[in-house]
Length: 320
Length: 299
Image (cartoon, rainbow over all chains, first blue to last red; front, side, top):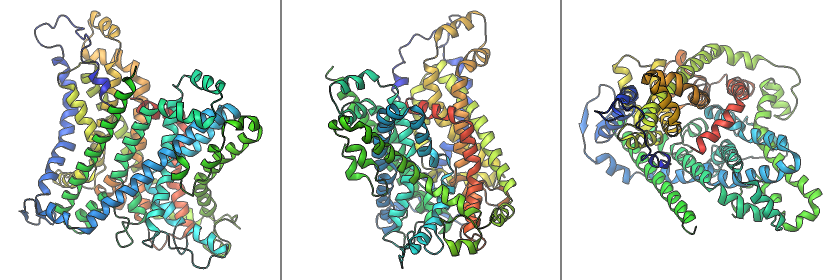
């Protein structure tokens, strides 16, 4: 993703010849100073401080802080909740990345390459806007709505099921077997519009002649989907996978308003577990350690995705 | 792509799409209606929660328990709306959200522009490192910053102040904005800069008279995005804004969860009122937004 900036390092930039004695970029430094100071104060220092916290035992506030070295991290290794939270991150990735990306690819291709042509651009843009609607809401508000819909006693879903003659409808968010699938369903609903919009925009830069030629050759929709649509918009697929995976690992709001990690910790995620330790259990050092591991996992996963992207780009460029 | 195997049962319409084999071109007349039906079914599934919400926001609790969530309200019941409105003092929360998001959008865009001017146009040394640093910052989980930020805010007397949230989000949003704008300004036409330099314009003048007008469309996209992102934020406002009077809309709604007054109509009315500003904003700026989503994706 940084390729745009790297690629331009060699460009001629000396626009101001009268500044010959010092490098041309020095006079621009003052423009970066406010941003850098703000960055250091709001992100740099807190991030470093959080690492320091993670080596301490501290109940927060005026309580004494004792240095415990790696004890917090060692304790994490034997903490069942901690491991559950990261296992649940995989479910979050399935619900926020895998399913939305796959469905998004199909929907975007159908809207662009099929419905848009058969029923007009108007129809496909109305559908696209509808898919995107959940994306614009505050996710906490969407969560509150779904929390009510899925409520076992007064929720809309179980009211409907009871009217249909189901005597004991499931306690969707309250039972360990259904809570995680229910949360995942809500997240798919929230996420689905994002890949559709990105992929449809990406398809607009694909040369329409490719599709026309394929159609003349008798390639059906699914052939065109595999041979043209997916390979052509691969860069956007990587962008969606990267941004959504990072978002899935960070997810907090939906869990907070839907289940608070329950029942019995079955839907706990790393960010919520960290929050719980910080502000509920007053185990600041421990919460900081959870947050740092999460940071590490995010950076490693993002690095892997960027590496995979670079490799696939090289492969693309290779045979030519 | 083996989409059907991973497609969850909730979203069936992907199936008819993939059944359109090459020979379907002979039956195109009917096939296309099935595909349209599939796409519409997905749209309806996405809309159903909204429809149920709108239907039950104006239904009395007894009407709800007797006739269920799908019936038309027997009478136009507005107690839910007024109960929620007065209980959370909605105008106050609306103003908090507008104030915080508005200032963050302005300051965040300004900071992004200044940073990107130095990086993209000024080509300062080590710019790749700076951009990478900002990009990494956008990936950080907020949990790894929150406790130190919380303590810092207390130390400087900004605890429970909207300004703590404004400062934090200005920096977080501008990290992304700098990354995006730097690559845009990295391709800024050098001819324009040279012409301005020949006219004797200072760097400050070049920024506001040459660069700013050219990148204004991108800046307006950033502005709108920063506004919406900040509006929708939950975690940091939840932690930093500890009293009722400083809360933003999402935090106010979420903190009423489990409250006894939140019966079905009040919950729905609350959700409805809380998401209306977002929807209105979306409708107003739909064009700019769809352009912006794209701008973000293709760098």
